Image 1: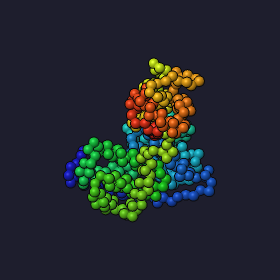
Image 2: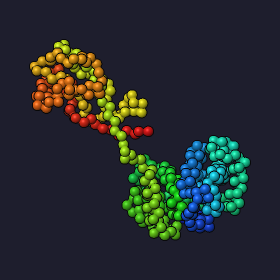
Image 3: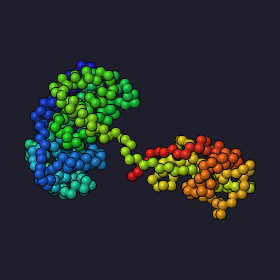
Length: 385
């Protein structure tokens, strides 16, 4: 049931107060553990890696984001209470994932344990997962219902939209559900960062909301201060959390690699004999652009000027070619290799003088088709797998 006006505000305030009270009972200050031997304790990199693996399982079995958020919360709570070895990490993670699935999902969406153990490639049997479930439940006192960061994200987002209904006016093609789905993706990406464990889930959710609200409205600071007061949080910790979250979310932005490879695919030309023995150039259907993965067909044609080869210089009219070997048809790449030597263009004065006469001869139409004669082809970035 959806409440309007003051009723909705009161309901959201009650949900936020209940979630904060529940978090205060469950959450403990994170103390980084320095292990001299990696075989003794689970390293931060191993923890982040197993969470990324759980995120893939969530997509593979088409489960809710709330399930993944609860599984990560159970995993962190258990690892904070028990000194586990890395060889048991997969079994612990898949057991927390299965417990979260049975807690959040509907009965028809819960995967069969044998199927989950087989298709997840966890390396554990269903019996081992059941035994690990009992261990986790005993250590967590059979209390799996906790306020996750995703719960706070939904509450803060609803409070922000209820107090600022015009918040999404700058995003006309985005409704509230799509917007909170985008924030959920950012939150799940941040949950796989060991460095952000030092903050409460409510602080992490508010940091993500504040970074998004800052881009949507000029008076974002007043809104965040209201949320800070309702959540009873410290502003200095929020500033520190925002900095780390912004650095973490920067990896989600697609960017061009620093060592981009540029590939030029030149135009193909055919040499056709004129009536007096000279050669003309005819363009083929190929165009300049980045080469596709199969190296056969360009993907995007270049928009800049193309580089056309020039026919042999002639005086007045085209003369018959006197080269030792006759060229009937050849690719433009092969033609470029000997163009200067065959046409004596290495001599600057003579080549420059003859060049003007060549354009007025049989190569005039080729120059017209090519447009400007740029010495450098346009470059387009391509992704190299």
